[in-house]
Length: 114
Length: 391
Ligand SMILES: [Zn+2]
Image (tube, rainbow over all chains, first blue to last red; front, side):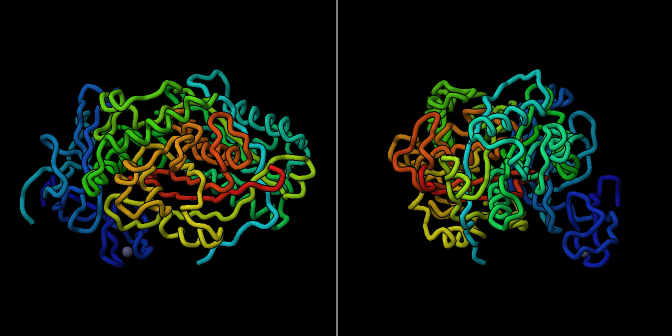
């Protein structure tokens, strides 16, 4: 395991992950949820190219490429896309990274078969 | 499941307080303007109002409770709705059931919000924990990001084009040009629509509503009271709500209407073809397409073709849509946007349109949608209204 391994909230009762983070599992209502390494492989479901932000932090970085990714481990997440727009259906790897203004964020990089 | 109608209940006195891009007033002023208009137009005294239902994003730290003291109301039934764009039809069905059951005699339904300038960004910062953790870090684009994703996925799945979304926006602006309170009254052409600057592709400027301040209101009471006061009123044939429908869908492709549609139409004894108009929630045009499909005006995935073939203007003889111009013309005053279709629907069925009056508007459908907690609107609602006696 390396620093750029994806970690997700994982339920010890039903062994399923979820996103965004919760203290209670949305599948079985189990209360033992821990952050565990997860398979970052997934597929792009939808994309958006942002040209406008409510925050001045992002304004200098437009346009920004964002996507919804369905991860193979059964959760969906909104992520930044590294290196430009992707098509729906593209295989990606999601890792923890940084957004353009330096904050922690999930980042999808194309490639790598399952 | 079947839905039950609302016996002997009237909805009356639709009020729209003219919206403003900028306001020097607190949200309480907007609530108060709506309440005083209800009293003035109905002749029903403030002391006769014994039920209150509110919706607002900007009332905090105050609540519906605070408003009773602020306005000197003593009520025995009180509710606050956090369902945003779905809150209008939900307010009506909750209030109607309370009146039918005798828990309240006269319910004032009041939304107000103050959302010009920086207020919109502050609201989005604190909208929900999932949005804060899972959506806002990705560009702080507010609702434009989830709806850009939903729109892009829908276009890819169905082949919907920008022109088809544009037809909805252009028809609404046609309707809004005749509506006295619309902030955007200039007609929109397809050239202008297509040439607009991108905001969150595939969304462009005219797909997005403009944040503003405003208030709406209406009263719910027993029919005999409305008749004795000689108030034009609507009856409620059916009403539904459904929250967090289809959570397994990777990207949202529907609201909750398909789950409740049969119950809605069965309770009314009517179908989509009987509706003289549709007041649909229109924060973005793709959501209007969701409602056309989910409420049975066309099959799932076929709204783009339906939009190409249908005239949505209020005076075009097709399916009149958002006959007061919708939020795309009025602006979006936060949770008030969830009541825009309802007050307009009440005006239409009672023959009191402020803009274009739909011909033979005896029965119509009002639909709501809202509350993007993470990546989709979780709340869906709808009511079928019909003209009451004496309207
Ligand atoms: Zn579990």
